[in-house]
Amino acid sequence: MKKQERTKMSIIKKILSVSAVSVLFFVFMFSAFAQGTEELVLDDFEGVISGGEHGTVDFGSGGGSTVEVAASQETKQHGEQSLEAKFEAVAGGYMWIARGYDLTVKGAGCWQVKPEEIDFSKYNAFSVYVHGANTGTQIAIDLVDGGFEYWRYFINDDFTGWKEIVIPFGDFFARGDWQPEKADKNGAMDFPLKVFQFEPRPEAKGTLYFDYVRLVKKQ
Ligand SMILES: [Ca+2]
Ligand SMILES: [Ca+2]
Image (cartoon, rainbow, N blue to C red):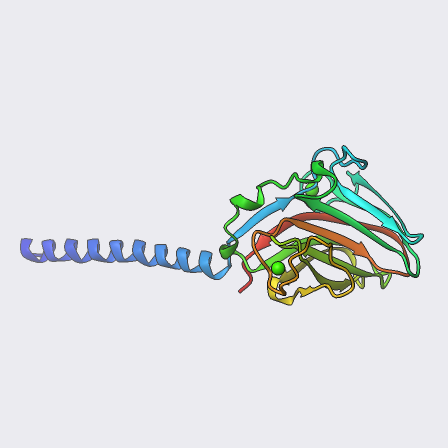
């Protein structure tokens, strides 16, 4: 091979190797993007899970329903523990199990990141792992927006074991049955969201577990 040809070959090899790296880079970037890696952990229910005025969960009930919460180390999806809710929902009763900000129980404001520090434009769905027992229980999942307006979505406990529930923000509806007096009932989901809460609906009795609450970008 002449010297000139060798030089040509080495240039071609260089171009090919640089191209290969670029292609790999773009494939990597594209797959990272396509898989929707945008996600943010809001709550993993690690640490102390307690009730009462100085507790870490804002929960309660009325109309004869009852609910108690605890940390479960046996049944968990992520980390060391999950949020366990033992409940009895009777006809006409109600309950709530909430974590977030500006609630009566200030200690429930213990997300891994504060609402005002979240760029909500990066996400379009709420994700939570629920441990079902196939009881048929209807479970309301609520989000509270920046104007204290309550938004709701229903799921059914029609599965056994852990299941990731992903709910696009747009699938929540403004609650018509109840809103707090201070709510700005404008029918628009105003960011930042400040609270998420769960409510097993009547009539039902059992134990549910919740874990690994995230904001995600659903494709
Ligand atoms: Ca956990
Ligand atoms: Ca609103």
